[in-house]
Image (cartoon, rainbow, N blue to C red; front, top):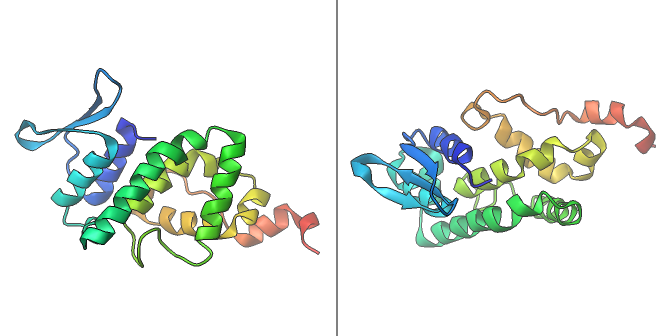
Length: 179
C-alpha cells in the first residue's frame, strides 16, 4: 500500500511533481524532491506533498493543527492496519464492517471535506474493494458509497477502470437476496 505507485498517484492527484520515489535499503518509501531534499516514510512524504500543493485536498488536509493530526492518524491507520489487514480474510471482514459503520454517519474521514486521509485509505483498500462481489458491495453500502464517490473523480481514478456500484446492477445480480 505505501509503495512507490501509491505515492505517485497521490502526488498526481495533488498536482505536485512527485520527484524521484523509490524504496530505500530498508524497503521504506523515500522521496527525493526539489533541491535534493530526501523525505522518508509514507505519512511524512504525504505531509510534504500537501505542503507543496495548492490543491483543495491538500489545503483541506492542513487546514488546522487538529485536522492535520487527524489526517496523519488516518494515514498511519492506512499503513499499519488497512494495507496489511486487507490481506487477511478475518481482519479484512472486520475492517470493511468498521469502515462501513463509520461511513453511515460521515461522508469523509476527517471533517466534511476530502483530505489526504481519504486518499490514503482509498488506495490502501482498493484491491480489497475490487475483490468484493456485488452482494458484498451491497452489504457494505456506506463504504461502497464513499468509495464510489471518490473513484468518480478523474484526479483520483487516474484512468483506472471504475468499479460498478450501481444498486440496480447489484439488485439484479442478487435478486434472491431481495424479497
